Amino acid sequence: MLHDLRRERLLMLAEGDGTGGPSGSSGDDPHPSTQEWFTGLPDTLKPDAAVFEPFKDKPVTEVLGAYRDLSKKAAEYAVPATPAEYGLKIPTIPEGVTFDQAAFNKFVAQAHKAGVPGKALQGIVDQQVADTIAESAAEKEAAAAADKALRTSWGPKYDENRAAVELEIKALPQTMRDIITKAGLGNHPHLFELIHLVASARGEGKLRAGGDSGAAKRPLSEVLYSDTP
Image (cartoon, rainbow, N blue to C red; front, side, top):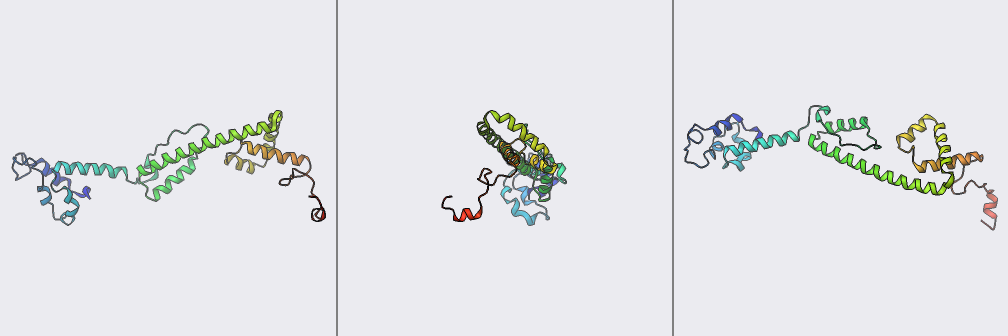
């Protein structure tokens, strides 16, 4: 690769001998530093001459410039010694969007182990944060629509029912409350509606069976032999 060139050799050729070109060259050559550096490759680099072939007719200054640019590019895509040395910049996260620092640190550690370069990892982080923000906005919009529907369904009892639901949630075991919180459902209208239905059914001494609105079960014989459903 270009970064394997010996800097001393290139600098010596670039500086020349004070006659306007590299040592032994004439100052009349408009490109005094071309060709000679290539033909003068040391024995240790001659086996790799094909790598340098595209630059053989270029001035040494261009070769040095290519080396410089390649070195910068290599630095951008280098993998640091430790995950902490990535120097990642977390995009601004809007209020209400959850950021799990522990999960993020684990992700960075895994990326480092896999050899993901710093620049690439920064791009991944930027995209993931953007996706998370977009998903959060969509969830908030859906929750707002659900809340509007619930207000319509509960009507004047909305505030009363919601207060009752919040008491029900507080009465749940801590493990269940933790699950609800972790899932981000603590204030979701659909959860309010579900708990209200269960609490209402419990107040009637039974749980509502799916689709029967808590109606009493019909005997099996009646279901099988009755002429009416």
